[in-house]
Each structure stands twice: as C-alpha cells, then as structure tokens.
Image 1 (cartoon, rainbow, N blue to C red):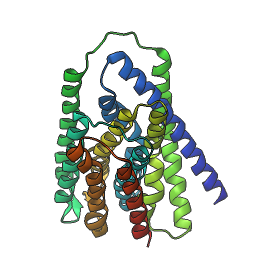
Image 2 (image 1 turned 30 degrees about the horizontal axis):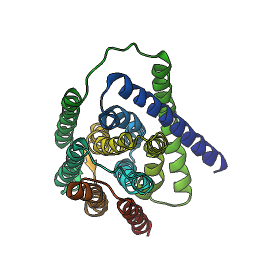
Image 3 (image 1 turned 90 degrees about the vertical axis):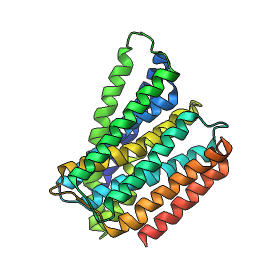
Image 4 (image 1 turned 30 degrees about the vertical axis):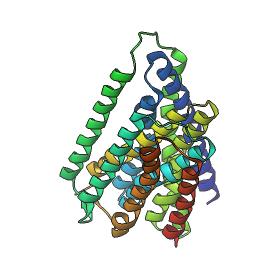
Length: 306
C-alpha cells in the first residue's frame, strides 16, 4: 500500500508538470500564429490535456474495468466544470464572453445530450460510437473555420524549446496516467471501494489535473480565455474522443450502469447549464457562478460516495 501511494503521487507529479509544459507551448502557439487563445485552448491544449483520460479509459476497458473507464470520462467532465471552471470563475471571472465560448459551449451540451440518447438502453455500441466520432470531426472543422475567420496565420520559425517541451509534456502525461490508474485502482480496491466511484472521484480528478494546472497557470498569466477554452474543449473530447475510444477497444460495446445514465450524465449537463446560461443571458461571467459550481460539485461527490 505504501509503495502504491508513492507511485500514485509520482504519477500525479508527472501529469502536473507535463500539463504545465503543455500550457507554455500552447501560449507560444497562440502568440506566433495569432489564433485566438480560446481556439488554441479548445483544440490543441484540450486535446493534449485529455490524453490522460484517453489512456486511462482505454487501458481500463482492455482490462475489463468498463465502470472505471466510464467513471473516468464522465467524472472528468464534472470535475472540469464543477471544480476547475468553478475555481477559475470564482477567482477571476472574465468580464465579457466570446462568440467562440457560446458556440463551443452549446456544442458541448448537444454532445452530452446525444450521448444520453445513444445510451438509454444501457449500451453504447461500436456503430453508435461512430456518431460520436463524426461529431468530433465536426468539432475540429468548426475550430479550423473559426481560426481562419478570427486569426491570421503567420509564418514564424518554430522555437525548438517549445517543441521539446510539447513532446516532453506528452511523455510525462502518458507515464503519469499509467502510474495513476494502476496504483489508484490498487489502493481503492484494497479499501473495498467500487470501480465506478474510483473512476468518478480519484481517477477523474487525477486525470483532470492538467486542466487544473492549465487553469491556474492561465489565471496567473491573466489569460482566462485560454483556461475556459481548454475546459470546454476537454469536455467535448471526453464525450467525443475518450468514450468512443473505450468503446472501440471493448468486446461488444460499452455497457453503462443505470446510475451513469440517470445520474452522472444528467449531472454533467446540469454543470454545463450553470456554465452556459449566465453568459447566454448576460454576456458575461460571475463569481457566484463559480461558487455555485463548487457547491454543486461538493453535493455531487456526497451523493456519489454515499
């Protein structure tokens, strides 16, 4: 048990540092290409920081732990908004919202609703996962279109330092994810905690640490749009990349517990609503919005654990 705890902490360290390098590289990309930070956050950074969730869910599914795989993906969505976006908005809510946030945010909500519709019978089949893959491609096309409208590509020589940091960050996150899932599961099983709860809490928060690091770093560097773009993009990736990837390596589709369909996914939509309704109505964010997310996240954890 002691060794498992040490290796889990080591895994978290790899993920945290790797995520930090990703942020620095992404800010550099935004600066030299003149692509809006929200777009960079919603694509490159979110894809990079979602790597742990993809690896954890795929590995868990291949090992027969589908509850852990699903719990990790859905739990990460809830942690991203309830905990991480909650912290971001409570500390430094942007005074204005952007058109990109509204469009990508609505895409996130629509993706979650489609996931529920596909999972009502308790099974996400491989053919059904193709619908999610299609939506993922649509998301990338949407972002490419937005970047062409809002930003102008500039031919600038790559700085080897940031290329190195990007690669090193990727390797660190991969190693950290493996250490996290293996030792987190071992510890929780030794304590007789179910795999679903492990995924929704310990593993989900652990694999969301890159997003947390991104948020904290972005807040320090006064770039909250990068943080919000990363969170929205990461949630879309969890729905349209992590879950379909786990389905792809499953034997005959991904079996979903009833609790996932009637509690966890609806809760994720509730969090998305808190994130989307105020900006839609008032064109800005509020501190109370972040506080509401944090309180609701605490309530969700209590309900889930009990």
